[in-house]
Structure formats: structure tokens, C-alpha cells
Length: 301
Image (cartoon, rainbow, N blue to C red; front, side, top):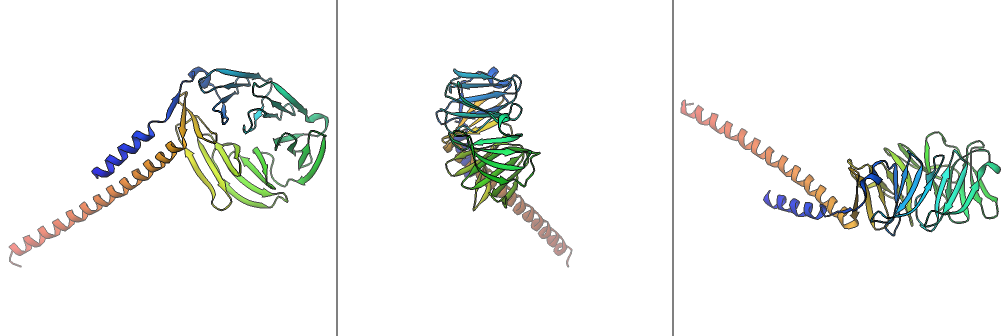
């Protein structure tokens, strides 16, 4: 027991070394969503005033956008070209590292009603056309539709879309689905409080309210980060970030490994305590039986 307790203390000391970034709590207070890039920059989106602001890791403002309608920010893979889409405005915007406009796409001029848009690269986007119930692969450089696929799934609760290697990833608030381009379902799993996708090379991640999941074709959906007390979580290729108690925390990959060790050690400790309690109970019951037998012998039986 003492060895396990000492081990838990050692691991806890390692975990508690996660970094608290010196970020103004007032900037975090009303944040609706947070994004990070691989340079450690943070992007905060606020629903209250539809503002989108970029900061460095110390909290210095690097750029700011103010919208008149809600915009959805696509996961930030390339900080030199950040993509935003507004269902209300039927518009997609590309902005640079200082959040200055690079290009705007007006879907009202060419399509009926676009429910969701996903930029695959700096040339092609995928569009969900609600009126025709089709998924369109569109080259916005030369304004041509490359492919059109019948989208035989519900539009109502869809919150994010990602297309990668001929697979369509669909996310609703409590469900994750994977289809091929014929819209044959390949995988389905429940996900609570899901918010958006993030892709890291071949890996598909799901960012939820206070949890991050990883999808693997062979293993399915696995939880790689979880903190029930977090307000918002996100990840770049090197670290995990969370806002908790209006403070910004950074966890390295080593921290996450230590957290897993701690949880496993805690589980082992609980199992050991249960085993000890069971042995003590059996010992007590055995002692009671022996005492009764001694009393019977004293009576001369």
C-alpha cells in the first residue's frame, strides 16, 4: 500500500506540472470556442459580439475580426489561410495570419442554399446543398463543380463536415458517422457535446466540449483527452489546451501520458483496497467461526 501511495504522489507531482499560460482571464471569460495553431497562437471566438481574435501564447493580440452574423471557423491547419463559413450570410472567407481578408466566396450567386462548407485546400471546397440534397466538390478558382453526390442523410442536426480520402465524416451534437462517397455508412458512434473536427495528417479528431476523441478505422473511436471541469478544450500537433476556471492551461503529450498512468494507478489502488477489505472480511468471518467452535468445545461437545 505504501509503495502504491508513493507512486501516486510521484505521478501526481508530474501531472501537476502542466503549464498555466499568463493569459488575461477577462479575454477568456466569454469565449465560446478556442482554436490553436502549431505555433502556439490562440484564436478565440465570442458569440456575444461575433468577434474572432488571434493572440500569441502570452496574450498579445495579433489580429481581430468583427462579424455582423455568426461564422463557423474551420479547424486551423494552415495559419496563413484560415477559413470561415457563415450559413446566415451564405459566404466563405479566407483570412491571412493577421486575419486580413484574402478572398470571399458568395454562394448566393451560384447555389440555392449551402448548409455547410469545408475547404479541402486553397483550390477546392466541399458544399452541402440543402435544397438539392447533394454534396458538391467545387473548384472556386475556376468556379466549376467537379463532382456531385447524392447526400442521403439528415441536414437538421449536422454541425460539422470533413471530406478526406474519399470518405465523408459527419458530426452532429451527439453522433459521429463515416460514409463513403456513395453514402454507404462505414462507421457510427455516439459522441456527447461534439463541436467540430480536426485533422492531423491521416488522423481524424473530434473536439467536444471537454473531451477530444481520435478516430481510427481499425480501433474506432477512442478518448485521448478528458477533463469534466474544462470549459473549452483544443489541440495542436504538440500539446493540448483547455480553458478551466477562466484560466488557460497547456498540457504536453508527456503530461497526458502521466495522467493516464495516474488514472491506471488509482484504478489499481481501488482494486487493491477492495481485495484487502475482502480478505479482512473473510479473516473476520473465519475468526468468528473459530470462536464459536471453541465455545462448543468448552461446553463438552
